[in-house]
Amino acid sequence: MICNLEVCANSVMSAIAAQEGGAQRVELCSVLGVGGVTPSYGAIRSAREALHIELNVLLRPREGNFVYNEVEIREVEADIRACAELGVNGVVIGALDFMGNVDRAAMERWIRIAKDAGLSVTFHRAIDVSRDVFQTLEEAIDLGCDCVLTSGGYATAPEGVDVLQEMVRVANGRIVIMPGSGVNPENAAAIIRQTQASFIHSSARKNRPAEDGWTGWSDASVVREIRNQLDLL
Image 1 (cartoon, rainbow, N blue to C red):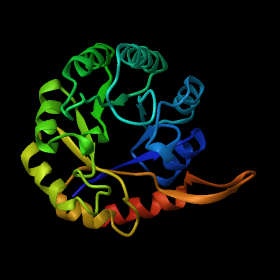
Image 2: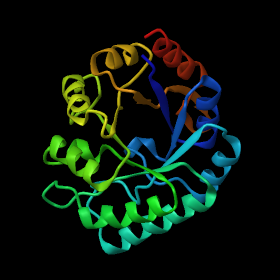
Image 3: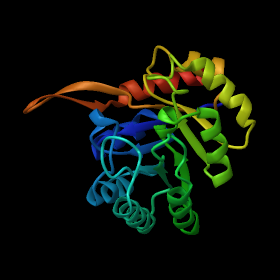
Image 4: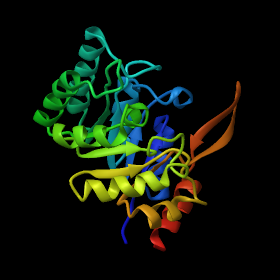
């Protein structure tokens, strides 16, 4: 079977490494230590200029929960428009209410802008802290999302692999289910073998020395190792 690889890149250099390693798509973000937030305008522009593969951008205005007020909703709207102007392929978004249900009003506003601009929409791992992952999946489909990034409601995709398998079955081609979190060269192929997902998501990081300590960047050799394992399926 054919499985595409998306690499979650926390910098432009990570995005370039993802491309060099054979990823089909990059999800650009920043501050992975808090689950990722919106990268800078300059990072998005530089990544778009450097890449010939698909580029999606995480739009999350802050760390913490996924319950947003009007100011934050408008901020994401502006970011979607900026992404469209910069020529990215898609945006990665998600909003919940205080009960853990999808905030349809916010999502409808964001998706309308994205779709009008020709961008694809991925519902991100807010689904994993939602009240019911299967209800949220149906909402994402109804809203017109193209993809759901999820670990099946668990901390990592390997832990949630049984739920991910069921999500792929329930989705039945209506939306792409993309397993993510804790995916590495040792488990990527096994996750795909069990779930039959067509896309998988990994940061493919390797610790590298930095002036102020150690930092984790996506590494082309790790990306290539995951890609090689997927190609053997």
